[in-house]
Length: 394
Image (cartoon, helix red, strand yellow):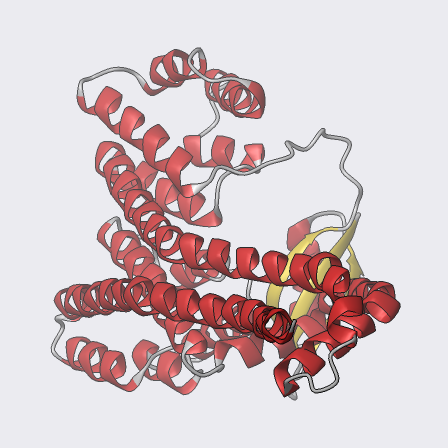
């Protein structure tokens, strides 16, 4: 069999390739013989299984784990509980639960069944694996339900804060384009008869004429730019650089970092409470984000932990923690009060996120309304004033 791997060599250079072996353990042994540090290794063989096309989102996961927690805590067997839930679902979700139910009936562990469906985040697999050892399955289901409920609440707040401003922005662009391309040309000939047009009116006529002649070229250029950007972003190295740029981008980058830190801290808290080993937590957390730059940072943290480096120090040096969070967690790590300090950090970040989202809605909407009014008002007055002047001269 062939296995695709990513690893660090002796010079701490990141490498990737294909290694052959009768099993994944044999493939790992071959890599370790080279003194390489394995980041990830998976089968390179094409699977004959039909992969399910989607993944559970935060809302679906919150509902599913709430139902499972309720059933388990009332003494209902896990197999019966999943069978009960699957009859209320449809489509690909029902197929996933059918597959889980079949694997459980065969005697497989829940964590294995969850991993095989390929519709659950790695975080779920890691927590269920620990819950099977500790016997705290009901508590784990409840913790997962609360985690994904909070994640969904944050997403809703962000969407609600930016949906109306985005609608205003799109409306202003569409209205301006209609006026420039279809309304203004109707008046262009009439306005052209006026000898002394205001500067604003002349500018509008120039823009309108320019877009009528070259508007198609701009659209084609924009389309080509988007296509090229898509293929550029698909390349791992290019995407890593872009993700790093957006991660450090002023204002919006700060918001993105705080949002990620909040998700990371929540994930870290519930996994620690359910007894997931720290290295496995980092492996699960690496999949919390699609940001390639952050994934690489977590790989470095995993490497540091295996070398015995302090956890919080590694997070801070690898650009994952801000100074305040570092100070809190470093204190918790030294005083054996890590989880309480982590809880304080989560509360502070939640408060900051709520304030930021609130300000986003308060300031962004009026700003865009004013901009829209200025643009449309400028266009209307640039047309109306010369028309009134022409009428008055008659």
